Each structure stands twice: as structure tokens, then as C-alpha cells.
Image 1: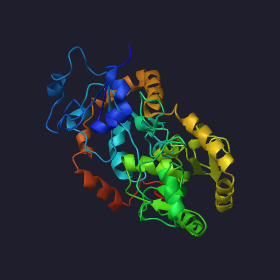
Image 2 (image 1 turned 120 degrees about the horizontal axis):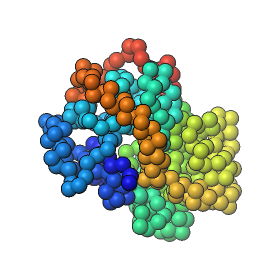
Image 3 (image 1 turned 45 degrees about the vertical axis):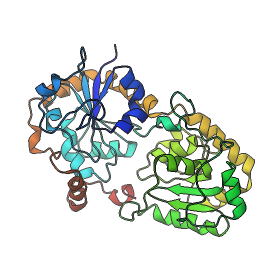
Image 4 (image 1 turned 30 degrees about the vertical axis):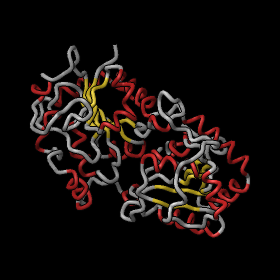
Length: 379
């Protein structure tokens, strides 16, 4: 029988898009502070009080804590079961994480983060992809309505006003007919404090707008974001930490040709160069962009291969892999749990900080403990 677990704090949308299958099976019970996910754990709750509210015949074998940009109810740090911490965006939340992560029994983060945390002395860390596809990007109608095949008409309005390049009237007509009318698309964070390394690359993309339709946007989410991906021939991506970020799989799932930086630590495990995506470097970016925009059949073939390939990499499927690893490491987790229960995490715990102060604290603390490659990781 699979082990049962709490997962949170997360939103109802996260549950619907990522944990639906596990919650439906009864293995996972998602929680938040208000009960919008179906189960509430408040800041004033004790573990014993929470235990009185379990569904009939259900109790967790372990707890999964989603640690990034949130507040963990204090009672969970004293839970009598193993704690698994999800540590996304470690480059931005390093100073909070280095206080919190010693008090969980297993840490899951990206490949570079696992290496940095191990150097910090947090040895109970494993590399994991926590950015699998949401259900809305999957072609299976029972799992989601994604896919965005080439012949799917887009109800998206005319080309957004915030863009580089030009869109002719004929381009608008092609967009209305479902054609891909954006040559190169990037949607993501443009803040220089976080994306310092990425911005010069986007400047190079912007220069291509003299001869191509280029869109560089931020603050676009959900259905509007999906429709934009469905209009793009090429989606440019550059990761912060060498991770397989959400954009990588989402772009491929939407039928666009993914352009990913060469040397990425994780994406090659999912997508092969010139077969399901294209890996660029400093010397060949513009050359490759022009080549695949001028050779539509090749672009389309690689994009379609990528679209088909990534359908297996949903969050649910990738999470299944982590559940197997948790099971394999169970004796170690149980032993760490026993040791943790004899310590007092309140001395180090940072969860009492309001959400916005966690980010401020990370920005203000410049002392020891942060990786030397901070600027690169935060780029």
C-alpha cells in the first residue's frame, strides 16, 4: 500500500493542476491555511489538534513542505513523521533555507542546488525536477487541454502592444486562423536584480526584431500565457540555475521549438539537441534562430517531436519518481525523524517571518553561507 502524505501549503489551483491524481487516489492530502484545498492547518494549530481532523481511516506517513515563498505552520516542524522539504529558488531564498533545511529529513531541489547545499553541510539533499507540466499543458483530454497543435485556432486577441518587432495586417490574419505568427517569444521575469545574466541575451533577441516578429513579455499567466505559447514558432529560454524550469517543458508541450542554453544541467535528460529542441551558445544564437525560422519544415518537425516527448513529463509523473526515491530512502528518513524530534527547531526556524520579510531577509544578509557563484545562480 502506498504511503500517505500531507502536501502543502499549496493553492487549490496547484492541487488541481499537479496533485489531482494523487489526491483522488487518497494517498495525498493537500493543505493550506484556510482549507480551500480541502484541509486546513493554521498557524495556531497543534499537531494533536490537526490529527483530530484527519479523514476517516487516514493518517499521514510523512509530510511534504513546499518551502518557497510561504509560511509553514509551526506544528508541522514537530510532526512525529518524516518531513520532506521542497526547496525551489534556492538562489533567492538561501539564507532562509540554510536555517530551515537542517530541520527536515529530506530536501528536494534542482541539481545545482543539491550541490550547493551539500557544500553547506546539508547532506540529506537530493536533486529533483519540481517543475513538471501542469495538466493544462497535456494533450490527453482527461489530464488537461494542452498541446496547442499547429492547426488549433487561437482566440487570443491581436499581437500584444508590449513587444519588439512588427506584426503586419496579414500576420494578424494568420494569427486569427491559428497560424504561428510570433517568430521568437520570451515570457518571464525581466527584473535586473534577479535576471542580470539573462538580460544581455534578451537584448540580442531584441535586435533580431529588425527582421523577425519578436515578443519579449513579462506578467503573462495562465490561459493568456498558454495562448501566447501556441502562437510562437520559437520560444527562447535561459535558466537561472541550469535547471529544467517550467518554461522549458511548457514551450515544447505547446508545439513551439524550444531554444535552450547549451550546458544546461537538466534539460538534456528530457530533450535531445536538434531532435526535440535546439541548444544554443554565445557563438551561434542568431545563426540558429535564422536557420530554423527560414527552414519551417525542420522547425516544425523538431517542435512536434518535442511536443510528443514531453507529454510524459507531467508534474504528477515526475512526482511519482520522487515518491519512489522517498520509499527507497525510508529507513534513513525515519532515523533522521527520530533524531529531529529530540531537538528544538524554534531556535533556528524562520517560518515565523511574514512572507515578504523572508525575501527581504535573503536580500539583506550578505554574510557567510551563500555560494560563491551567487551572481551566476541569481542570473
